[in-house]
Length: 79
Image (cartoon, rainbow, N blue to C red):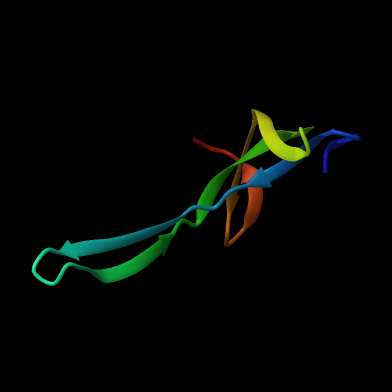
């Protein structure tokens, strides 16, 4: 947690995507060749969370200029 209290918090996090894939086989009516791909890098952002009507929602996303890599952790983005 970076800051906050009560109904508003700012957290720093990286969201690493995992993408599911498959191919539709029209002959059998099924999804085949299922697989997953997980990315190794992600941007790091400051997420502002606010409790609204009892539900936590992301109300702002701020760029940090940092990136996350599974092999080496968080580092300044060179891109």
